[in-house]
Image (cartoon, rainbow over all chains, first blue to last red; front, side, top):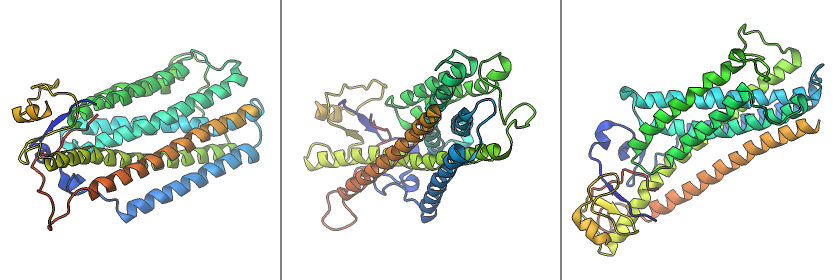
Length: 308
Length: 61
């Protein structure tokens, strides 16, 4: 465990970036409580998602007919485009928009940062599902599990880029610093989304063209197959919304616990008579603290002496 | 049909496990929040000295 010194930032409240304990819940107030409506909405979305997925599976596996060309493999199409839609357009699109809103000075708020982080994590899960379901469909259709096709490769690159985003968020930093560099990383990674979308148009790929969102906006699927595909899109979108709501709440709680545990550690130090009650900094247990942190922030001398 | 079954099972299994993971993380954090809040003195009474003005501003990695 490393020693961590956190000094109060007097401009947190002034900036209105969501760090004000009175607004977001701080060590003194607890995390912001969820309203009854939010809890109810989350449950309704969750139940609707489960029902929607169950209906999609039922229609996709037992009700819809096999395709003339693909046979039963067409049944994978009822979930594969759905998870791809969620990952590429909903999750990573939302992450890009939220990151942009964080970087825009007028809308800068840690709300957008947390929303982007939640969307990316859920999007990565859906991106993995996209690659796996596509690979399972490709093996009997193309004869290979994987091909270095433009659509497949750009989708895999998207996964790597957003895994990098998640790794970047784990680098310790102040919330504002982390949010800013994460927002730039998300925008950079999201540049790959249009490349994935248009890869089947720009290059001659093994992957088939768009079935629904094609250039003419004329779906090449009809009847019960089309309805099942549409239901799959709706159901997986509901799954995404539910996961996003829960993941966002986890982000709020994580932020609060991080600050709350610091608060508790300080109180324990006070009880031991180590930390001065008027100290303007918090020191967590760990190795000796240098007189200057790696980030270049000065540590009050008395705090550094206590830590040593 | 085995490829189809495998595809559905793997994709839905991943989503189900991730959903469970989210619920577990939220539950664990909610309990942690309650523990931290309980260990903090309430207003009035023979409580420990009030907190200093310091408010942690960074997430501790």
